[in-house]
Length: 146
Image (cartoon, rainbow, N blue to C red; front, side, top):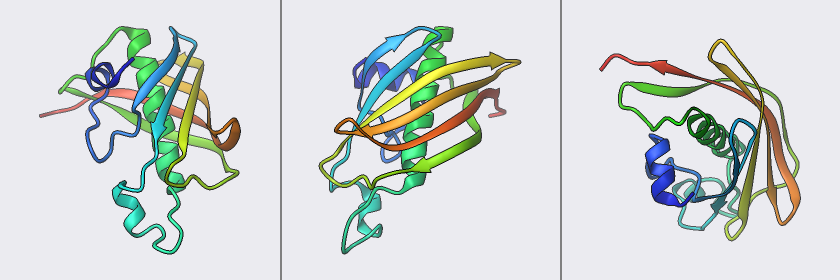
């Protein structure tokens, strides 16, 4: 999936779209995406000026966006104005290494199960084949009032 496909499946936009490309996709099973981390990211201005580090919560958000792509592609749905894909839980979150400008963040999402509209994923983020973060992420799609 290129950026245009991603924009069709996720409602996120700059500066909060945290996936640049999808390199692998197996329906109802797994997705691998990537985020090119650059010094131009707005969060680097304050986190931290003396040594820029991507905030852990944004790494988790990038993983959650990967789960959204996997779920929407699996359901063959596009981002709709009338619904949002909400993060409803994170378990076992661990951070192993910092992510810095110039890194390419590889985002792995594996579907563990879907029950009553709640999707559970095993997620991991890597830089240069080294684990930087992992978590179990739960999400759901909800209709919204406009």
